[in-house]
Image (cartoon, rainbow, N blue to C red; front, side):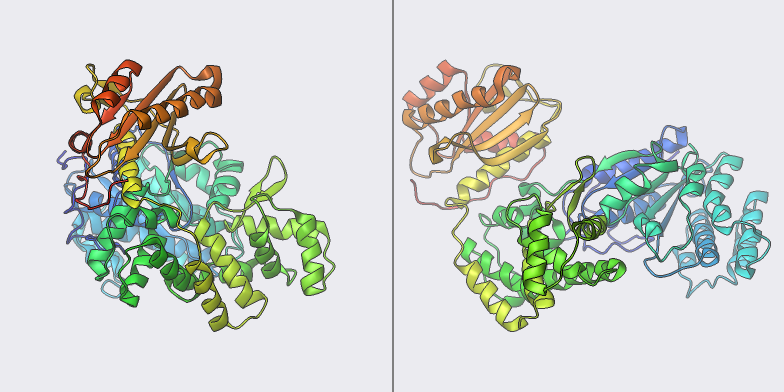
Length: 607
């Protein structure tokens, strides 16, 4: 059958879409790995080699956007006349109250619309304002070559609308896509968004049990995602009838490299000024979350204040946390979740106090004490435990189920927001005063990165390792005779890792791949070369790695980047010790080799 290549390019979905993406093409960054993975998985369903899959990740990581872009690509890059083509169907479960008849009727109608729209290559069929549900059957009968199975589907839609003639409507609806694809030996891929909603009170009927039969068909795999990772992973897919029926494709926060790229793209699109060497600091402060990064750049554009330092970044972030785009989004998210679970009238207080806890692990007895002190309420530990479990279902904190304890969520922006939100919404303090104090507090924060351009180089080095996994890189770019084979998988790559108690025992880059570890050092010195002393200091740090990793460490790669090069004495020592090193032109060669953008031209005082 006729398809295009398997890699996304800048022009993808530029003008054609069946379901509109929310992120402008000029801003959309990274996520090619997930886009390509889901597209290829959908296409492999033609050969019956795909199982149902969950795209799993924290809130606001771009999961829905990925689904929409893959659906659009499947819709427009295939020959819709080919009987072997994959029929893409997108559906988002509502977060509003719905009964079983409404759900079943809507689900079947949605499926038939997508089926007809794809086979006729007519996106207008997806719009109920253009094609009313009452004329959908006539349209399909007139324009499509109708099989008995499609006719049966239209008949079922009519019965569901009349609310009669169907014993279990939700079962009939969920099984229809598989029933048609199985009987006709065709291929349908269901893209189901916000799946966690089926476990919330607005669905007063259960559909999970009926989904087992639907998702197991090789002719009709279901790709699912949602904004509440805990409910998806633990309650819907992690136990019961759907356990073991889904492959998992995890989506992580953006690396600092791609987070910086997003910040710069967003700045260009929205008319904000962002210094290139500060862009990776933006990504780091936002935890690699694309929504937070974009919201912060929106605020930069609104304030018309060039983002050229950490001090300005802290000020802008304080404004957005207390009254801007991040405030609006997180306030809506938190408020809606609390409204759903606020059985005891103390949920806001418990959430706020959990954010104020020192360390990551929550002390329930301390929260109990604070509730009594601040609110004058004597609340049992069992009640606090129950509230925390309900809060964890909304990804507002984490429940370590096997150990029976709780910890803060790994989301630095959410944690900071909860502290500001609690002062306003829980303690009742004046929002303008809280905003002023938040800005004052953030202005006084110490710089986390003393050398922004040095950190920028670390970010590029880290991305070379991420993008180069499984690849062999040219040895001359590391100043070694043999080409360098990178590990099959790095489990993590971290910046500024402290190996010992002293500050000078910090390495710029620490990349772990099981028995193989890479450490990196970055010196973006212009007008000055790195000497033997700096190399010796780096070697001392490498000795500590052996102590940290122990006997399991088989291979240690030591990689030094110096923008303007090394002295002769330094090179002699590095060759003797088997170290890798790269100059600016070497690093740019590595970036080209793995398909990344080149280093920016920046000025910096040496030292």
